[in-house]
Image (cartoon, rainbow, N blue to C red):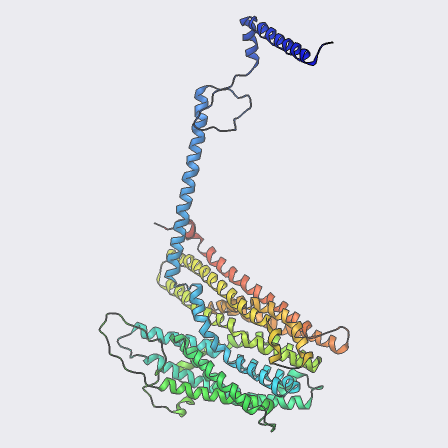
Length: 621
């Protein structure tokens, strides 16, 4: 029997013998056979060792060394051409950025930081009246109860919407003061310091006093009819109507002071004084806070309750006017003049009227004809815009007061007082846009009067680039301001107890907060867009838009009121605010699209220059 070891040895020897025999067989083959076999197998070309390319025209491609070299040379040429094109594109993009920067500097386009630096002090112009209303709401709700708080809802609505009708004073003041400041800068040697601006400021205060007196007289006469129209007339509670009427009539006495304060704050901003508007709002707020605590608890119907809150607000406004007039007439400390070849611009309004004696009769005199003409272009468009904006809010107040419960009225007053009290955070963007945009459009008009057609087209092209830069700055500022506003309103359930101890009212407020949060988040874009359109004097579009809103939105809201009174559907405060949020988003989107369309039209107008000099932003040299 063969062992396992012997078997392995025999197998290995057989394998070696077989391999050796195969090698001998291969060596004995003839050379012709080898040549015949080699023709059947394609030969592999030797590739360059420097750089290889994986793809060839065909898998069985064979060519001469000359053709192969041309193919690789073409590939290397293409690579170099791509590198040259990418380098040229980078240079082109760099030239575009440099050209755009020169255009932005040429038109003095503000950055986001500069927009916010102007808008933050401008908050005080719009903040004074709603801040007073919010303080009145907090004081009355915590000291007097739910019924007086509900009475403030229509009363403050009448005051707020009436105050918006005199918003043309702020736009006109900005234009008049800007022209006066420009006159002083053009003639620094012949014009005395603050001479032109002081005369303009005095005329503005006189005109504002007359407008405020007219508005106050109108509110005192028509207080009850306006309240009845807002509340609903037939189902009104007599106690609620009486409390609301007292508030409106007493607040009407303070309208001249309110008009003077708003115009004076706007004039200070146009002059470059960003501190005084904040001081005015701070002084008025402090005085109103302490007077509310002193008067609201009084038992007399014409001194305590809603009447006490109205007396506190009106008194605070007049005391602030007295302080402001003394500030403007106070003499500043004289400083030693230094010899210099440069001129400096005074950015404080303290002592602007120091060359005159304080005379209260001078404040109620008729303004000059030039001042009246300065305000005239802004009366109709601004009043139309404000009326259109107020129609939806006024109808909401009407629907709530005429068809919902007293708790819903109180909750709506809390929500609206906070919303409209904090809206100046973004409303100031509209005033900032109205200050920056006209300088660009007026420069275009002046160029079209004095330059050739080719230069006019170039000016339009540059203006389109400048406006795009302006839109970007305001878009960033709008996002920042809107986020701040939405954050404050979104946390309302955490501090709603400051306004009322009633749990039913708190629950209703909590249901509405998400809707107010959404509309607050985008309200900055709406205000900035509206200001840009006003600055471009696109008044026809704004007038047509708000003319439609004035009738369409109230019609939709009145259908909600009808459904609530008939009981065909369940209606609450959130149902009403849902319609307002949808309307607010629609008008914002429409204004943004309008601005984009206007800028694209400018670009199309400058196509002839674009084809001559290339893409917008490329240096013509």
